[in-house]
Each structure stands twice: as structure tokens, then as C-alpha cells.
Image 1 (cartoon, helix red, strand yellow):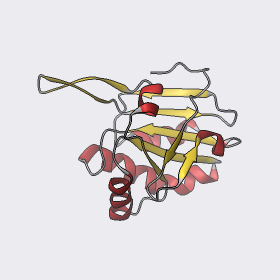
Image 2 (cartoon, helix red, strand yellow):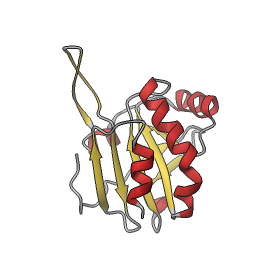
Image 3 (tube, one colour):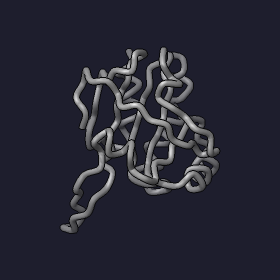
Image 4 (cartoon, one colour):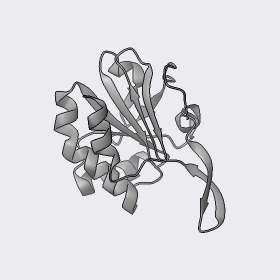
Length: 151
């Protein structure tokens, strides 16, 4: 996980509509940048829907929510449409941003070891500096937790 106080690594990735987004596009706004393992899985759906429900409150506080996984643009589009997600989902199929943000880790599941995205959420300030970092977050609790961080 990246250290608080460090500059958030720059990136440019396609969203669920195939449009490119760069971190620089959000300069002057707070960014909730969350990394999740996979579209349409139980935990990831809970987390995404939670961010979706609270999205108007994030906007009121001057923040945007961006989700990143290694799923394809098409997968993100289906996920967005199925659950009516109002925020940006970025596709990092090459895992470049996932690795830059240090969330590609060894995971153990029922004794089996594999590599994957560790659910991690960063709060990036208006100048592009990481001001909060949470690793191994609880999917269902993370949206409300992050809204609280904006107080």
C-alpha cells in the first residue's frame, strides 16, 4: 500500500464507456480511488452499490468516486448497467495502475495461494496527494467509512 503524504501515481485508463480518464482530470477535487477484485462478485457488488447509494453525498462534499479493477471495459459496462452505478469504473487489464498503487498482492483463499487485487481505498486530495489509505477494507462498510473521511 502506498504511504500517506506521497503523490498519487498518475494514470490514464478507459472507463466503462471506453473514454479515457486521467488522475489529472480530477485536479482540484477530492478523489475516492478504490481498487476491487472483480465485477459482479458478492463483495464487489456490495461495495459498488454502497458507493452508488452515497454518491450524491460524495458530490456534495466535492469528491468523486472511481473504481478500478482488471476487468474489461465491456465487463464494467455490464456491471454499471446491472446495478445503475453512477460513478466511473476504470479498466486496468494490464494491471499497470493496480501495481503502481501496490494493491496486486499474494492472497490466500481456503489455503490456496494466488495473486490478486487486495481491496484497497485511497483518498486523494485536490493537489493529487494521498491523504488516507485503507487496505483489506470491508466491502459493505467502505463507502460509509470513506464518506466519514470527508468530514
